[in-house]
Length: 403
Image (cartoon, rainbow, N blue to C red; front, side, top):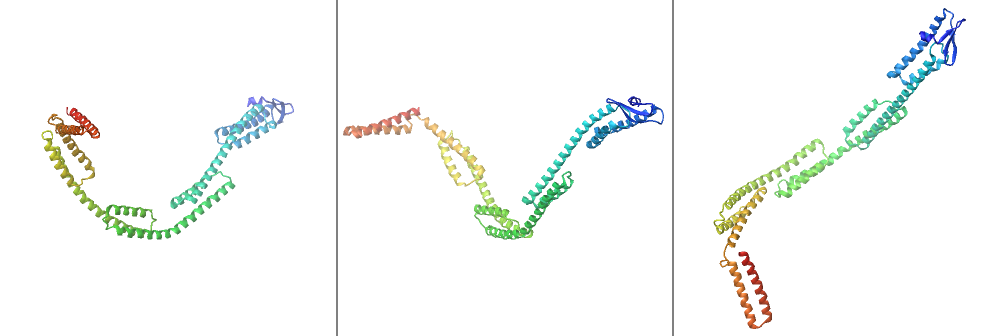
């Protein structure tokens, strides 16, 4: 307070002045007492201004006040200073208010930008809701789901604020039109549903009749495919009324069950037969694999031929076992062949029946050549020479192979 009174004076006739950078100016008159009391009175008025500025600044900085309102207060106080009836550091307070005005302007700009953004967001949200409602109204066939979603959109719509009245009204008209359009389209759908159910009942009665014709068939593969095709058609056909659908389904399913039960019984008997065949072939295979091929190759070969004949008479076995059995039997056959070939290769050239046969053929070719030469037939001589050369070559190769 004493500092602020230093910025004023009272002259002899009671006029009160305040000192500023531009000079002194009259702020009032004091006749009620000592000059010091007058200066204190006008200084308290200045203190009131400072308090108002302090409060405005505090509320602005804390965010408790609207920045635009604070800016208005700051400008009002700042504009009043040149004529304010106060004593104090008016220049310092003016400078402080100028800086505070800049802060308030910035905050007011930020607040405006935030409001604009909020309005934009609100507009975008309502526009998105309208577009979703229009899409549901035009395309959706999930009637319950779409109807529930339209109710949710309406509830969300009521929570969105900030869109200007004109735009909000236009968006609402679009939403209401979409909702009404959906309601009409849903009504038309359910109106036609009864007709579709009647048509579906006719179609499914025909499918049931066809299935009942096929239930006694023994053409297993063809009929099974036909019944599966009927099932596909059944699933693709629209549903009849609940009661009719259930009764038709029971007849349709009973016809299929009767056929597939009989087929299963036949296949089960066939499987039992194949399992018996499998046991027979496993026994034959065990007998074949037990042959002592090395000790008696010819006997093993003869016995294997008997086993192979019985093998073919044994009949079919389960598919998953067939390949393994055949592979093991071929292994025995390959072993017999290998041992027989090895035994043949161990014979001497003189005892080898194949070499003896080939030598006889060479001798016969030599005789034919000799007869051709005696006859003097050039053509026969040439042919006989070629045949003899070929047979001698084969004999030589066979002798080399025999060792």
